[in-house]
Each structure stands twice: as C-alpha cells, then as structure tokens.
Image (cartoon, rainbow, N blue to C red; front, side, top):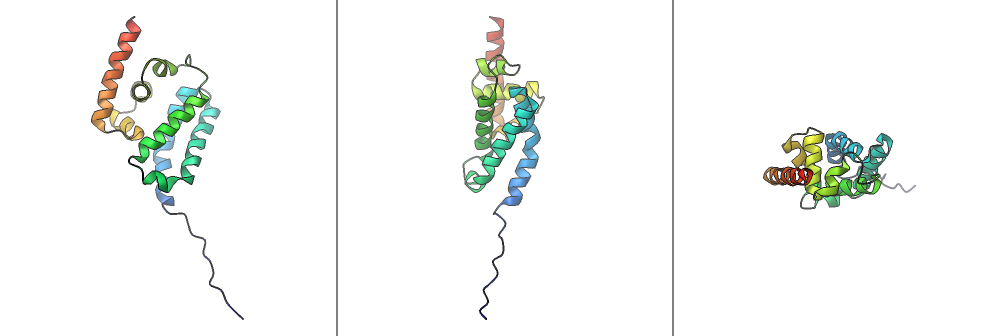
Length: 146
C-alpha cells in the first residue's frame, strides 16, 4: 500500500498580525463610519466590507509603503460611497475641506481622538497630522465666518 504524506492545512501567513490590526482599529473605524454614514447597521457593513477585502490582500498591503494609510483610504472611499449626502452631520467637514483635513477634524474634534491616535489610524506622521489639523481648523473657521 502506498502512503502519501498528509497535507496539513496551512494557516495563512500573517493571520495573527491581521487579527491584531483589526482588533486595534475596528472600533475607531466603526465610530468614523457611523459619523459619516449615520446608519449604525450600514456603518458596520461598511467596516466589514473594508476589512474583509483587506484580508484577501493583507500580505500585499503589508508590503506597501504605509499599510495604515492604504486601509484608511479604503475606509474613506467606502464610507463616501455609502454616505447619504453632503448634508449629513459629519459631512460638513468633507463638503468644504480636503479629505485628509476633514478626516483629522472629524477624528480629533468630533470623535475626540488624540492627534497621535488619529495620525496612526490614517497612517500619517505626527507632524503631518498636526499640520493638517491646523490648516483644517483655519480653513473651516474662515469658511464658517463667511
């Protein structure tokens, strides 16, 4: 009788890292999506869609220049597709500011995340995040005063 080596099911590479990334960021992603979309169930579907798509290309994303920035762009795009319109609560930032500025305003002022945490979520250097926030505050105040 010929025996064949048993084929073990291999666990995908970097599975633990993917799970840790999701655990560390899911709540903040969900809070962001809920503010932009306003429907909690739709926000949850949005985040699940982004993370499920990420799982299939996790190794490639890890090889990118900044994985957090790539995932953040995916989340921003997906929430944008699901957003009711520019008149929703958090949309005021995205209607008048550049995307990165709007996200910093939303994360820091509306969701009360520290600048460091917001920067990590968006995949930005701390000094870049602070500059974006200062510019966003200045631009938003100027537009609001008109």
